[in-house]
Length: 115
Image 1 (cartoon, rainbow, N blue to C red):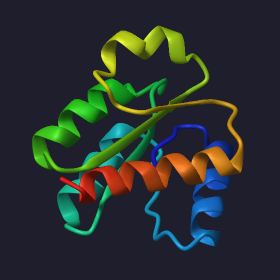
Image 2 (cartoon, rainbow, N blue to C red):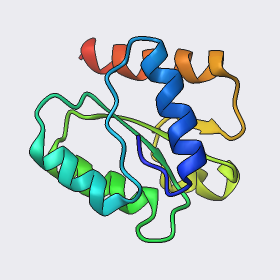
Image 3 (tube, helix red, strand yellow):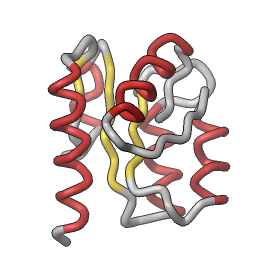
Image 4 (spheres, rainbow, N blue to C red):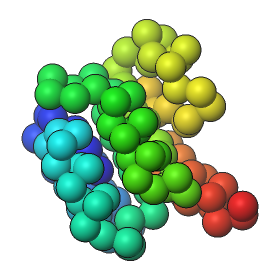
C-alpha cells in the first residue's frame, strides 16, 4: 500500500488488515520498490498515482519490470488525468467506499490468480 499521505495510507492499510489482508506500507515509490525487491510474497501493489517523490505511474513501470506478474490497483482523486497512462490497470477514484476498496482489491487478486 503506497501513498505519500500518511492519513490515507494508515486508514486504507488498517481497513485491509481488518479484512484479513497482510499489508506492507510505503510512503513513496522508492520505499515500495525496495519492499518489492525484498519480498516474494507481495501479490498486489495498491498505489496512489499522485505522489511528490515518484508518481504512481513511474512506480508501476518499475514494479512491473521487477515482478511482471504483480497485480496492480491504482487510486487517485484525479482519475481523469491518469486514464491514458494506466493501460487497463484498475483505478479507484478517491474518495471511495470501504466496500468498493474491498471489491477492487479482491478483483485484482482474483484476476491475476486466474491467469
